[in-house]
Amino acid sequence: MKKLSEIYKRLNKKEWFEPVFVIGMSLTVTLGIVVGVHSAFGQADVSIANNKGEEYFYEGKYDEAIQEFETLQREEEWPIWKVKQAEIYSIKGDYDKSNSLLKEAVIIRNKLIQKEQDKYSDKDNEFMNEVVYSFFINKEYEQAVSLGEDYILNNEEYKPLMRTMLSIYMSLDEKDNAKEIVEEYTVDENSSYDMSVYANMQMVIGDINGALSTLKEAFELNKDEINILDVVSQLANYNREEVINVLTELSEDNDEVYNLFLAKVYSMDKDKYIEAIDIVDSLDDSFKESLVYNVLKAQLAYNIGNEEEATDIVNKIVDSKDSGYAKYYIEATKYLKQGNYDKAIEYSKKSILENNDYADNYGVLLPEILLAKNDTDCIESYFRTAILEEPFNISMIINIGNYYANNLGRYDKAAQYYELASKINSSNADIYYLLGNMEVNQEKYDTAIEYFEKALSLDKENGKYFRALGTAYYNIGDNEESINNTREAYALDETDILALNNAGCYYMTVEKDVWRGFSNIEAAYEEMPENIDSDTKKKITDNYNQAKEVFDKYIEDENIDINIPKLNLFY
Image (cartoon, rainbow, N blue to C red; front, side, top):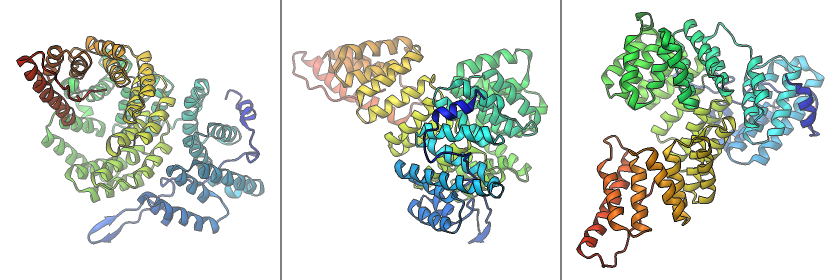
């Protein structure tokens, strides 16, 4: 691997870091998962924790978890509990304390390994991955690379650490090393799940064709592996246009597997729902008993508002399967839609116990349930575990950022995750657009402009980047740049009512051109689509009502001194 020993020498400048480090025992809940199912008031309580410290961790009781891990560490020489404490300090934002604990843990680990390597070898892999991951999350990239490379050089391949190193190399823009990680990853060809994870890794290094080929093999091996659909979604989020082009070409020979994948991509775009349904309905009958097919069919039914059909499909899936992580995951989503949040959590945890590697349980489903319950204190714990499982999963990382931005208004926290996503995929323009919006929300318009311009440097055909840039310039008083970029946005997409609204606001407030301003705002108001979100609809409606009031006064007397109200602009 590109002479990793040379890279190791270059980076290994820390005294505390010496032998072959690494680690064992996992810091996440995923690793030591125990089922505790007992009856309490008629409800099953399913635990995914090994001990009280992990229970506190997943309840968001971080101070109690730290104390419990301190107690556990006093009773054991292997320093895994220091690593667990370090993760909590990282969550709390105390990176100095987190890094200090990680270094202490590595020093203790090294001494123990030198004395009795065989005694701790079964714990070492997981321990090292946890430490490397935590250094990575703490932005201590040099430490993460040094530890990870040295361990890979001196030990057997450990897949979770390989996945972590892939993310680190992509973050450092060391694409050749990232590619070598993927090439050296030993795929379990008897595991459709492992193959789907590998396809996601291929996507990260830009090998779209390879990823789709691997997913096809995974589907042919096991048509019930729902992670295949997740990875197709991630591929589409990574580079939708290229994925559609490749799938369209591959499906020209009536390859029904690629047609199925194309339908999944189309299911993500409301303008393509009908095409997706047509493709799914045209597939061979041999597909129609598979879990993958029926999950997609249910998703499409929900998308077009046919909840009765979707519910029937989900019920048939649940009734036809005895167990399995996919069955429990689907059952959990069913309870979530019903508003039965306790049962939803129960079945999500059952899914984890069946497959504790499936990141969507931690990063998507459980957070959705907890958000619906208005129980958000512990969500960060699940997010951290999700990223540990798939640190290269850009879609999930962006969704976590969206959660902090849209649900909690934690724009600084959201920006941390968007930044991580931008490092793993530096060519994704939309991530910079999201980062720009986080700066806008903190009124840091100059920085926002830099992000929006970065997005445009990657994609000059997306009108919303021009629209956002125009609004940012408006807020710093650069009126010429503001209207020029707003016009560019509308020129690219004449159905963009947000750009039309912004132009109206500009003409009315800057140029004091009431006629022109009102006509643009009125057009935006009248052309609002039925499915527009309520917040946007309210803002455009408010603009219209205020602008009309000004316009009505103006047409009565063009010489009247009119006070232009503050209007809503969109990014």
